[in-house]
Image 1 (cartoon, rainbow, N blue to C red):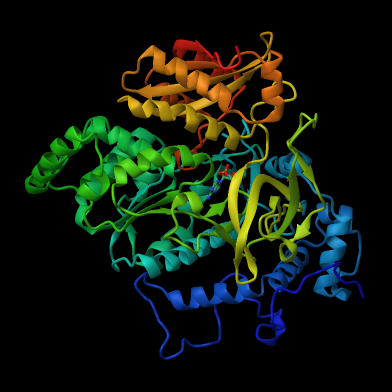
Image 2 (image 1 turned 180 degrees about the vertical axis):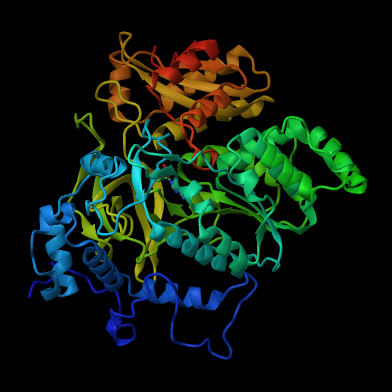
Length: 629
Ligand code: AMP
């Protein structure tokens, strides 16, 4: 019988001692045990926090076994599908124990990236319903946001995808409620948006994963189970015009302001966008509340009807809002969220990775209210849950949920010097299973999912920060793909983020603030050089911007960049200041091309010609760095 090489047993008692493979609670936490009499049975969220917490503790403690069994389940479900057949052939998997199957699987099935699977997914999109990646035909495809990769990708979506979404939301809610309990029956002000769903050539429904989720049974169940209700009816979420939806989210959020328990969105960007809009919209919103009318800017009939069904004239509320907003305007909207939503307990959203640049603005709007960083996942699969909701967003980690997918980790070692690969800054080692990851080590995440992705490289770099029982807690580092490279230089999104942070610190001395940024590696002009685009709110002297530009050029620590700059094989960094509203145009461009605001991430580097045209047309000032003269 085959055994797994070098497997480290992380669990202290045999998993089978209390949960057999057959009863492995991969989806619903239906543990046999009753809560002990003295246990904290928390129904604040309207469901059995005890059960879901207990379930997670069990699977986390036994993560290694759960992973092996998860893999077996995925293979069993999809055995005989074309893709698995290609690599596993007609091996009698029933004769193998789960450990042997895991070992065989990882030695026979190769690592794959999206482009390897694309021909299979395309056939599914074109209507081929034979068992290509999964035994059950795929009827829905998700579109990844594509804003970091530059293009959207089709990813299979099944009922399992919605179920795990519901499950991670419940799990995260249970952890949050331990620290920030909320009132049963309260409301959530959710800045969520569906994209348009459309049909592929083969008749499959396509849209973003969040769109499918908002349309799913699970989204309704979540509201019932958690007894927390979103302020906006579905007509607003699925309206298809984010400006109109945002207006209505804000309006109804204020109508229910006393009942709102927390404010949320998928990615922090959406909350920041909503409040930037609020600064302009508040007078109209307050007028609508006073008179029970709806601004003519809302033109979508179903949305109008849904809002007007709820609204009735409320002059006292309108005058409170007017009074508060008049004061807030004077303080540049500092602490607007707790001022207008006095019963809100926290703000909850993904604030890590490419969302970190919006933290400053989010803190400004949130004042003293805690910021709780939301969970880690992707269109392909959920990965980990934030089990320490009181951690500041900068330190947040995600405990891998070992039932969601089968996870492998490719160890990554950073190259410091004289390494000339232009593909990447890392050297890879062989992938290891979840049970063999080490604290302090960086890895790329690899997924085998129930939806037919096998040893799929997610492209995210994470660091193992520690463990929650037997499951690793991950720190999100960045997308693996290099974003800025001209020749031997290698910079990731994270590197750029740090550089922009340093450069924009100089704006603190002024009354201006950085609204958003992106970049481009210009390899057409000679020598090639980096261009960083900034949108700024407020007035800044040219001298300060010159200094920001110099500071950024000097702040790239990548050896290849420093050497190239000294030798002038990379030219001086260029800072382009774009006019106000440019990043809105970029957002609009993505939304017009099928992205959803709920999943939108500003591309931190672009070579997309349409975007570069927008940036070029909108540039109002240019500076060239003097760091290496
Ligand atoms: P998409 O599937 O296109 O919506 O984007 C998924 C990607 O968003 C992931 O692969 C990560 O790069 C990023 N992401 C998702 N959740 C988080 C998080 N909590 N922190 C940082 N980045 C995240």
